[in-house]
Each structure stands twice: as C-alpha cells, then as structure tokens.
Length: 204
Image: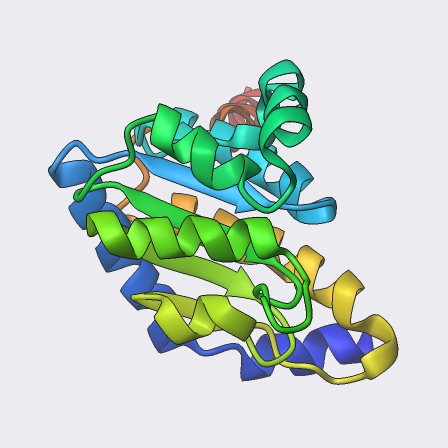
C-alpha cells in the first residue's frame, strides 16, 4: 500500500487530461475506441468497454471479447497479426482510437506483445489516434501514442500488479471526468437517494 500511495503521487495528471481531450474529440466525431490488452490487460479491456459505452457514451470494442473469432484468427493468421487483422475486419479508420492496456507497451525486438505492436502500426497507417496506460518504460506504445500514461515503477517485483491495477484506477477517472461522463452510475445515485431518505427519517 505504501507503493500504491507513492505511485498515485507520481502519475502524470497532465497526460490524463490529454486522454480526456482525445476521448472527447473521438466521441464528438463519432469515432470508435478499440481497447487492446493481453492477459490482465485483456480483462481490463473488457471492463473498460463496458464503462466507456455505458457511462461515457462512446462506441467501444475489444477483440478479446469474442473468443471464437480471436482464436480462429490466431489459428489462421498467427498471434502477431490476430489483433491487427481483427481491426482490419472492423474497418479501423481515421477518427477512431486504439487504446492499449499493457505492462510493457509491446516490443518487436523482445518479441513481447507483438500483436499490439502490429495493431499500432496499422493505427498509424490509417490515421487513428493512439492512447495507452502502460508500465515500465512504455515500450512501443509510448513511442507512437498521442497520449500515454506510464505507471511509475517503484519496485521490479510489483510492476505487473501495479500497472494493471492503475489501469483500472485511471480509466475510472476518465469515465468519471465531467467532460466524458454522460450517465450517472447506479451506486452513486443510490447513495444520494439513501442519504436523502435517512435525512427525511431523522427529521420525522
């Protein structure tokens, strides 16, 4: 928890605001956001799709949500091209955004998350915006992104745990931001209703 506090104090708030701007612009021009992740990042991508669609009103998708299509593409196209070919099938275009959740950001030289790297190369080619929340040095994602939060490394033993945790913290900050939030969340509404009811009972 000490490391969590230290990381929270070091995260670059200006980059988060830049992400808000890019997401707002994407929604304004009716662009779509494609969340890409592997492992824990894939789980975060699925959760983020839910939040950005429901709370922020942005059309979003994640290739890892359709196991049948993804495994068919891995079988036929190979791991490296599975996400990029999925994006081609989704007709990725200028005005859309590719948003990466990755611990290392991808590296072709180290053969890590090569499917994310190929997807970002495609995004550059078609003129789509690139965003991310990554760890370590940011890898390929931070090199090509329009905005990318790099979760600071406090300990080499906890890089993955903190990066994937802060991905959730930061995307929740984004969907809750006044410029992006379009729909209230149920528990926040219930909290207000409960407080009002408790006050009424106390007054009675």
